Image 1: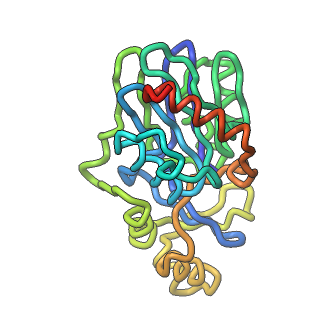
Image 2: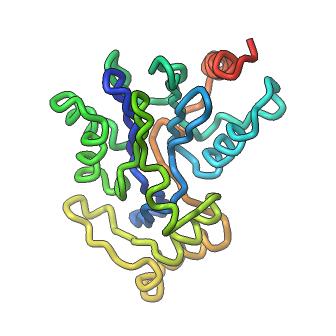
Length: 247
């Protein structure tokens, strides 16, 4: 329940900015926290979907001048990863992405909606914008990074909400989150999370689980639940070695 897109020819990486959590029929979300699903390193641009805590581990590790040690590398379970070379635009890692084409790659539950748009318009950002209209957990600002020009808006909302961790995002969920009954497939009505929790036991349970840390923000995708094979892990490790000069 997020959307990531990479247009090879255009050299554009794009994701939505919505973080969410679900309990039963209720989905709570928060947009534009400043904690992004895109991470830019000196050699590559990464896109993530999956468990927020796992994404945080990977972002922190990528910023640490990572060494070739399996002991320090974050876990793989619960995460979807795409990484492209900043100079060449070559896709180095593309694991747990449901739609992979020669010209573009798409991840998250909004992937098929994004791909349908991209197939016509060949525009990564526009494809993410389109997915927002169909996937209730894709939303907020469309964040992007251009490999060709370096143009990005990754710091655009950081002066307003500067979440550095998933714990920070959880606090934003509790303070300004929006909740919807997504069993209502047509135009679910959004409510202020804190207000509805005061009058609805199911929503109150969701609020309590986030406040206690039992649940935390995610960028969910169905692929995050599939087990990583040794071959997939080996492919990622080899690609990281090439990007960071371990090999």
